[in-house]
Image (tube, rainbow, N blue to C red; front, side, top):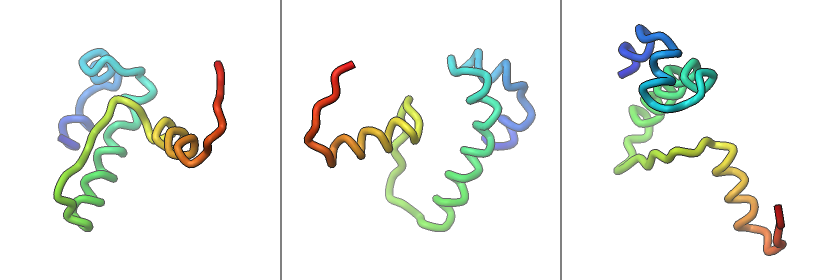
Length: 71
């Protein structure tokens, strides 16, 4: 997958996956990081989501805090 991503234009990746081009440009690095982590840690499973790490960090922070935010 990494090789395929490295040899595909970010605009094509963005179009095919329905993601912003800026995200498509960093996708190969993200895949390489996940590959390195799985090679080292050998997890039983990996969960992939549509949202990014910032969303996960915000959700985790709010889960620890009982305050309510209204937008």
